[in-house]
Amino acid sequence: MEASYTRLVQWFRESSPFIHAHRGRTFVVHVGGEMLTEPNAAALVHDLALLSGLGIRIVLVPGARPQIEQRLTARGAAIEYVNGLRVTDTEALACVRDAVGSVRLELEALFSMGLANSPMAGLRLQVASGNFVTARPLGVRDGVDYQHTGEVRRVDAAAIAARLDDGAMVLVSPLGVSPTGEQFNLYAEDVAVAVAGVLQADKLLFLHEGEGLVDDQGEALRELTLEQGEALLAHEPAPTNTARPVTAQLARALEACRRGVPRVHLLPRAHDGVLLAELFTRDGVGTLITPKAFEQLRGARGDDVSGILALTAPLEADGTLITRTRERLETEIEDFTVMEREGTVVACAALHPLPECDVAELACLVVHPDYRDGKRGWRLLERLERQARAAGCKRLVVLTTRASHWFQEQGFVAAGIDDLPASRQALYNLARGSKVLMKTLA
Ligand SMILES: CC(C)(COP(=O)(O)OP(=O)(O)OC[C@H]1O[C@@H](n2cnc3c(N)ncnc32)[C@H](O)[C@@H]1OP(=O)(O)O)[C@@H](O)C(=O)NCCC(=O)NCCS
Image (cartoon, rainbow, N blue to C red; front, top):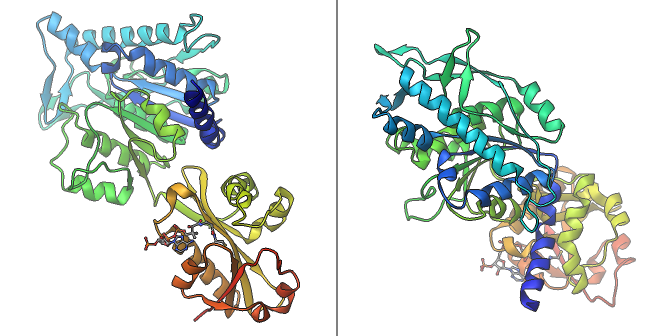
């Protein structure tokens, strides 16, 4: 009991930076109709409701493929696929309308549950749906008339945003209407990409069937840039919409990145709690695809102060670093560089100019324990060295109690207190006994 209590408290505290980072953000989530055919459907609904309860603006785009196929089978019919694209004839369209409608109603019912002692107790979640998507026919291609299969023509971003502003979760179905009043069967994945693009969503999350992406050695691929994703797809056989392998999702993910969605996640739907694990733990469980490199090294801003304090506090407590108050950090924030990963600060360092203008002090170089040994310390140092050179500095000085060898391996040499610039000597804290190291900048 005691251990699980401690674990819960620890987990809750560790997830708090993510809770803050995600609040008010817009996430578009695509999930196939398969989720409703399985007993754990309610668990995923509860997790989505929890995200909404935490202030995340959720747009859910559910597919309805198994439900459509079930209806077609009952009529002794089947959807025909030509060149990997489905042909929706009049009979199939009737099944699509029926299936999409029933998926929507079923989800609305699940989101409306609020039994005492259930995860939904006390939550009054509004689910808004509507005619947000305008479609056009796929038309005739290579002599094949795709009939009622359509593609997204326009998404009414303002209408969706208005519902989100009202605090509702928005449900967008893969059925679009053309200005002529006809209905078209759309790929839910394409709808999700279009919605995420026009809303400029902060994240698009694809909950895919089956296993995730792996590299040549069979290791899970955790991060991909747009460029790496394109290279990966170039070596894959063309993804078919019928088989729906995760690579088909990857193609959609890359399209979303091109449309300006900064983070697209591919997550295995069958893993229980996959959304929470991805969004509230440091490393997540799926593949994250970003237009650019995933970790960003940048100058610190005022809103990084809390992140830096969270990083330095344990090291201040054990004496590795000197104590910096929030006020001091706020004043010195412009000297700091941070490494940001998924909205959280995972490393930082400061470069303080000294009155003797040919020397600067490097301080507060910290990499979060979970991210050490990945050359992050080295990358930070390299950046600060460039910064120092650009400012005309000839030497860097650092005072450290525990990392003198690390600095020596980066080209620093041991020096004495007397070697410190006069301004810094005056402030040297003898009681700490820090080692002084210097590096001449080439
Ligand atoms: C020192 C620190 C910034 C290095 O960050 P990092 O991203 O892990 O460093 P890199 O990946 O560039 O280097 C890792 C190598 O340095 C070694 N290393 C890490 N910390 C070390 C230390 N205190 N002393 C000696 N070597 C160290 C690692 O063992 C690893 O060696 P390996 O390649 O042989 O396996 C990080 O360990 C840290 O935050 N330490 C606590 C804060 C601190 O003391 N900061 C300095 C005060 S200004």
